Length: 220
Length: 220
DNA sequence: CCAAAAGTGTTAGTGCTACACCCATGG
DNA sequence: CCATGGGTGTAGCACTAACACTTTTGG
Image 1: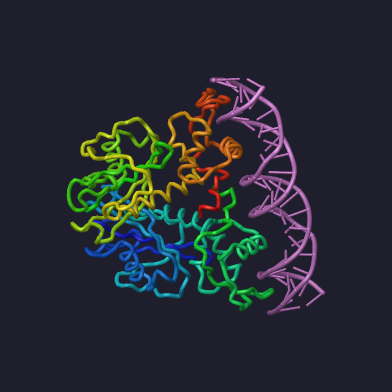
Image 2: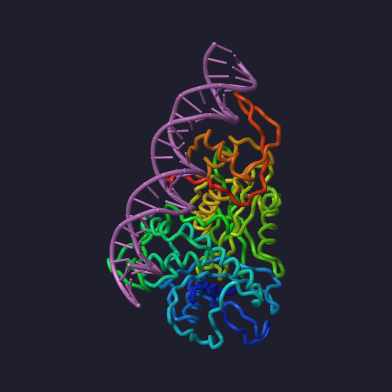
């Protein structure tokens, strides 16, 4: 039996959050778990992950980012029998989307780290967070957490939230705007709070960041 | 059905080579394929990869490096039916080990790139090579291709072979010996060819390279 | 005017590339 | 002695961190 489990990450209320489902049936009755389900007989793995994503959030993969994370196959990971789980990682913007899928009555966004999850989901979640943290360094995927247009300060908040660090706003602005293909100006400006209006940007076309944005050494 | 496929890489005759098996049964009769096999009912995925590695090469994973690569689940990837393949990547030293496992009569090391493989193994091999290339940048895994003790020039040949580049011997020496925990001097020296004797080194204890050894931009 | 946020300029330091140069061996 | 490969020093360049400073808004 092959299943797909999803680590859906977003940023809500200045915190990194993961979509979890409270289990209504044994095993692990009442515990939080990652959303997931079995792969259909003639279904591709990525397609299964997209389907689960749509069922849980109503979002398509194009709105954010979806990639394979790793595969977990400890024979004892599911007490009901042998289930190999292919985990996918998604980075999503904080959309005001009602989490209202078929079986999502008890789904909700929970701040990470979240411990005590069902099955081996603590491990899968930890792997997903670590993957997200390192991908922000050398890819422009931080924009997957943002709406279609965003300010540099909002992009910086993504980094600060995911990495749990403070970054210098001035140096960050320069690095982001000078990295080829990371962001493109839309030409518009907005005032988010008080202070000088900020330019709006959209995602650029690059898939790799050069130069990379390295995390401060303190977190290593 | 869940199978484990292996991308076993080594450096032989100044070239990056992969262990392939010539298929003796349909489908893809007579074509080269990656070694692999089905996961046993109560077997962990990593254990299955280790078992296959041992069967094909007689080597234990400790001699080199073994890690999960990715999982491939296109419903059409195997014409016999649905098989999800969890691919593992191994980096191994060039040991004079007879490739003499159970079904390895037709196994041999082949230079990469190797095209026209059975199933979706072209894609898996390409992914494995790309993973190996990028891992050399930020981890000390190049030492997995080396015997227990080696010279800096031998380590440099690993990088040059895998990256298909030339590196400046002087700068390479400095970077490797100054990166914390990459290599440790054994105190011994050897003369490999003519010229001044070289110091011997063994693997250090670091798992991440700092600073990283970046590939020249030409290959990107 | 003042506070706050956006954005620019400047300086000191780090790591990299390129290459001049010295060291230790075999022939 | 010379050729060959091992290893160190150093100058110029790219990028970075730290922070002074200017710009543009709201109150």
